[in-house]
Amino acid sequence: MKETIGVIGLGNMGSIIAKKLSKDYRVIGFDIDENKLAELEKEGISCETTLEGLAQKVNRVVVSLPNGEISKSVLTTIIPSLQSDTIIIETSTILPNDILSINKVCEQHDVKFIDAAILGGLSHVAEGNAKLLVGGSTETTDAVHDILLTIGKEIIKVGDLGSGMSAKIINNGIAHNVMVLIAEACSIGVKVGIDPEMMYELLGNETAFERPVEHRYKERMLNGDFEGGMSNLNARKDSMLALELAQQMNVPLFSIQASHTVYDIAVQEGLGNLDYASVSSLWEKWCDISFDTSK
Ligand SMILES: NC(=O)c1ccc[n+]([C@@H]2O[C@H](COP(=O)([O-])OP(=O)(O)OC[C@H]3O[C@@H](n4cnc5c(N)ncnc54)[C@H](O)[C@@H]3O)[C@@H](O)[C@H]2O)c1
Image (tube, rainbow, N blue to C red; front, side, top):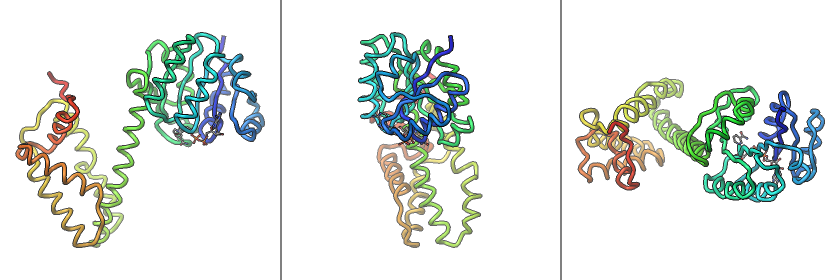
């Protein structure tokens, strides 16, 4: 028998998810905003006006709510009324700790739970190009495999429950930091008279973004190999030049200023002659972790 899926939260993302799922499954929507229910019903998707009404009719639940507090409150209310073995898929972007506390309530009621963070925006999901970062048991993930592939084109099984949310938060942290870096770095370039189109060419250069990931992360950090290469001393000297140039041009810096301090610390910690990927060993020490998977 095909699953009946409850979609809780019919905002920008939830309404797109509900419409996509309704092509293959029976879908029942719920939102506190009655206008959202009316909009979905116009598309031929039935809705319930109470969580309890929805709980009795579904055996799968997809959640798309604004934040962790609302997810915890809504799910804590509905979980006791769900049929046992119902699977809840949390797609709202929330903290992994919220996922774990919701799961405690699930365990008390024999309900299964996974986190499936959406990597991509509304257009990615609408056009079927989003990826899902999934945390939770393989058995539960496999049981909703087809539902997940209706929402996104690729399932990336990250690890234990909550890890999908952690991965998404980290991904966005990188993207948002890189955006600030691009804005400030290109401001120096444009202020010294480089054409903004040329700055775009420079950003696409392999040494800017690709090499730190493919060479420094993959080849060096994952192997604990920091011999040769470009030293922390040279990286520190070059970021000093970037600070001086920005100062001369009156360009405020945030990201390059902060990373310069890390190279200062690396040199003070005796890492001056090692490749600059070795700044990662500072975090290995501070966090008591290891990136080296070669041992
Ligand atoms: N919009 C995006 O591009 C995007 C991308 C990836 C992930 N997300 C995540 O998806 C989630 C939803 O995002 P969105 O853009 O659709 O937000 P939204 O504000 O458009 O939708 C949230 C919906 O939840 C409803 N809601 C609020 N409290 C409720 C409750 N107690 N019970 C039932 N419904 C309730 C609101 O009425 C609203 O319709 C967020 O956690 C967001 O971070 C969004």
